[in-house]
Image 1 (tube, rainbow, N blue to C red):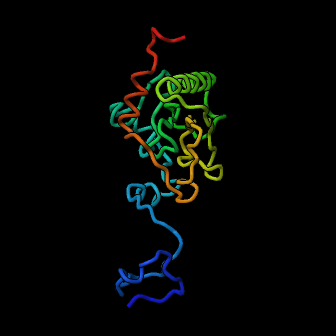
Image 2: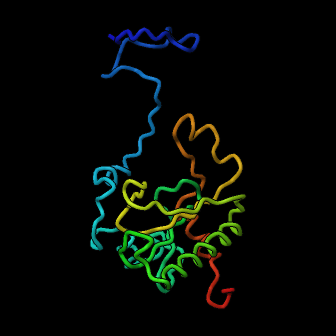
Image 3: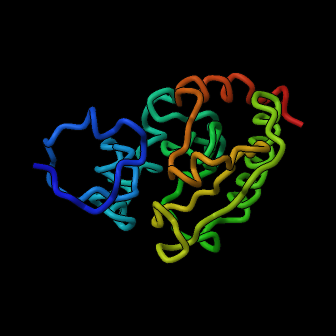
Length: 197
């Protein structure tokens, strides 16, 4: 028998089609979006990647671009698609060196990180026509860094209306393309050495 929570059916005719079978728990106002693929990340917590052997940003360059979602490899930094994007085309600019803080990178790494961020914006404008961007680095666990041990800069394309009711009400983000499709589009549009400005 289903527990009576005092909440009346919201839809006309609900009572006629609802049986008395009930699952454990008390109904509440929250919808659930099941994302079991994130469990490996969640279980380890923000500080799970402490050294180069298990850091995804250190491991990625040793794999193929397709496998690691890398769109460009530079001299000191590379550009990779975010595995959990805020929006389609959400890129990360990472130094190859395993350093946690913006003050830890060299002048050359700083310059290339800035250059790659600018190029990422140009490429995303070309392939996806965003009307704006969010750029940023979360420094340290308290600063919100998901992988605090390896510095990375976010390049998030934005469109009018991309903050619609779905993420706000349902706390769910709809991503319209697969990561491999986005990676291929961005990589194909990335300028080669002869195209560099």
